[in-house]
Length: 372
Image 1 (spheres, helix red, strand yellow):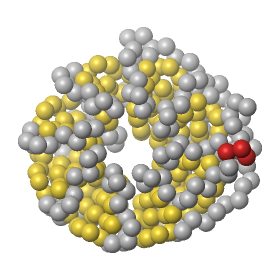
Image 2 (cartoon, rainbow, N blue to C red):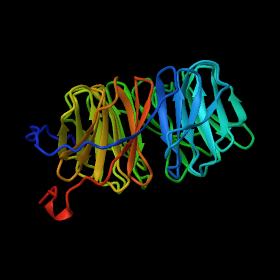
Image 3 (cartoon, rainbow, N blue to C red):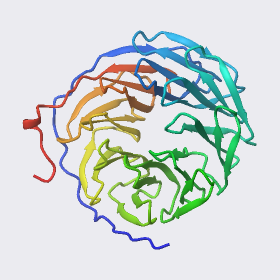
Image 4 (tube, helix red, strand yellow):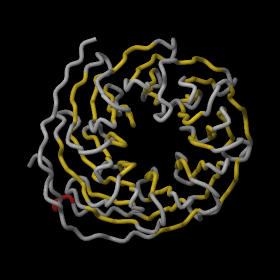
């Protein structure tokens, strides 16, 4: 398979911008887990949160009051991931106990246990229509499950890298997974056939993401690069090379025109997804950045860091509009509520925090525009 590549030239970082930092209110601190919180996710309607913990439980929280609505017990050992079905009716969780459990979100009842992996299961993702699940395991396989029956529809081999979740295409017809040899695999779900193997990264792939239209993929790697791929051909369209350390996460803007990447170099970079040009370098974190998320309107980014803070950025200007500082240990992840008014952050201090994040961007007429 041909791979057409265009490397993006290194450019000096822009000057650090000075801007007013706003202190956003912490609406609630969600405490109750007794060990590391490995994952947190909003319900599709933004009314609830679910969290997975190494204490062996999943907790469901009222996002308005911060109260714990349910504690889902049943896994034996650490729970690594929890995922809310797109229709909001169910939760799925994975564990060191080699299983995936499916729960009714309203009652907390365990509906089924998906067993078959021979080692710890680290991640799960729902299909867009809420009928199927993926699971990625330390046994180096990806499995596809039919939720209604509990049947395993396919076992996808290929030396799966258990660190990176398998992700559904927007239309639910394809999956991407990552292998231990630093490749990205594209699978046809209906047949279980591998459609393409995307090679080029020279170290571990840490994050992969579909573009909103499903035509492109982005992958981030410990080789300090982000690559953009054309799914139909398998061609590498661009190599984004400005980061100075491992790239930990990559995310598409909601309109598919830009990418954001987070790195151990303590920065977040915003890229033009079409040209591969670095538009903005967001600096201010004092340690590695492990998570980055776009607001639903594409105007802001949130980043989480080992420095115990979350930062909120105005994308157009590159200004840091808020620094959220209440956590007492590293912040492992951050996610926007569906309406873009709140953030949830998970930390090594074993808590979740919900933050009020009003639209802190300056009026549009006062915002800088890339390319002007």
